[in-house]
Length: 150
Image 1 (cartoon, one colour):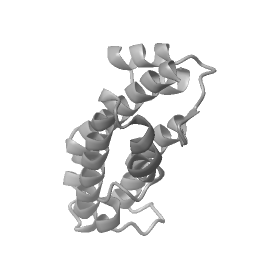
Image 2 (image 1 turned 90 degrees about the horizontal axis):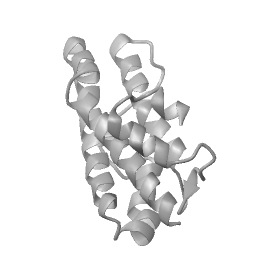
Image 3 (image 1 turned 90 degrees about the vertical axis):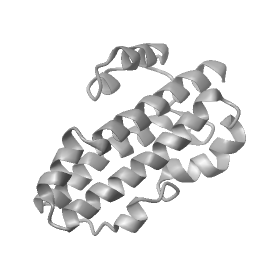
């Protein structure tokens, strides 16, 4: 999947991407996996806009920190849990997604407090960067696993 490789280049990501055919269903169990992945990847750009002052969104760290406000979070706690809660990788998605939102909220707080260097570092190589990679990796793995089974 060329779009996935443009974001990540690790061996596990290549394995996940190769297991999902280019024509694979993007929507499984009520979630468009590709859209959910892209939305979480775009958080880096949204936060960067706050850090450098070019963003136009009014983001609230208390809301950003909640893992049940985005489309993926709503799906996780409803259809996702009902349909895929027994999949070993589902809990990894839940945990990594919650951690991702806590990290995004923290990075946003840093930016809003004027700690732009710290926020920028967090985006590039800090906890936010690691959490972003992890949630994407786990979501991609779940997509691969449920796509093969369904």
